[in-house]
Image 1 (cartoon, protein in one colour):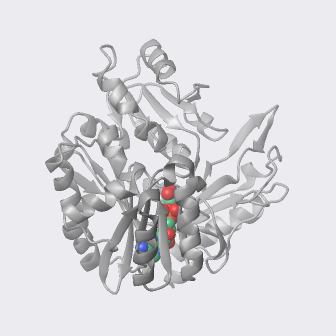
Image 2: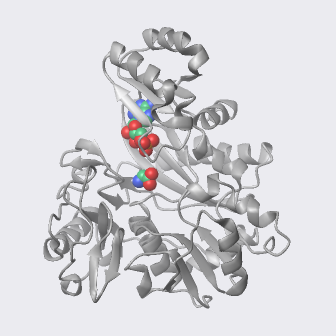
Length: 423
Ligand code: AMP
Ligand code: GLY
């Protein structure tokens, strides 16, 4: 099978690494990829916003399966585009159609869906500019902290949590007045949930599902979970507090009603569902749905899948997921993200990355890198995700940290406390 993988981050590097191990693979192409993905396939310089360009490439290269890494092309309807095209409709796309991608593309839709199917989530109400004063009244009724969410995609910046009521009202006003453009023309205000978060990925063929190993990511730039939010500074799998009893609750209270709800809505969902969960006392609540795999969680979850991943994807495409072999590695994994100095604010690109060949016993998943002359240089805020196996997550983190010290570039920064809260 020839595969086209869309995306360019650490997530796609981990996927390329895994897919390249499949005996079913013919050629793997990554669009656009990075300096890490070239070790596992051919990078192609496609404008992935232009579905006609993708069509041309898919037909010219006899692509048999398209895997969509990020959410934007899904929300923009790439899967629908394939289904509607005479020459493409038989070529499977892993990732939901638009009607499914809206679970991530609209927080208001996701909340309505959860309410309709009795999936535990924070209580909420949605407001527009016309109902601003109702929004103020709703905020007055809630207790601090106040959680405000732009309805649409806002590059991970659309959630604002504030302690002060007046600041929350001001934030609501600004959001509804275009702070995030069209994405905040509706704002979801919800109750704050106090607990500990984790990520659970589910794969479905629209009929049945499999649950991937759970993970926890570390979003803040600073140690001890302090400072600004980032795309993710590291992750671990498994998550110690997600014991069997808790994961059974997740399956029964969240996963099954989600899959059944999608069916009842007539949404034929083929791909991954990312559940952003929070454990409050011993109960799971959904913070958000994403319609793709998480980054950097993928860099710890995919290495824990022992079975053939391309075979699994073929079963999704053929709607035979029930018969797929799905085995999980009992070893723990960690990933530590090396980032550019200044990130998540301004940072410089083009710094030469040294000592990549000296790193031992870890998988190096490139996030923001590119090849320049004979060097690998930084090309993003998140640069390299260093993944390691261990008997437990703490052993695994130690190996990643050793290599985080060895690999070097000007301005390098990383968190040394990944997994700290699980001790
Ligand atoms: P994201 O949607 O990934 O930008 O991140 C939103 C983050 O805000 C989550 O990871 C949580 O840490 C936090 N958050 C979102 N909704 C709630 C809520 N209802 N209660 C508490 N924290 C929340
Ligand atoms: N790590 C969280 C995300 O991918 O959204």
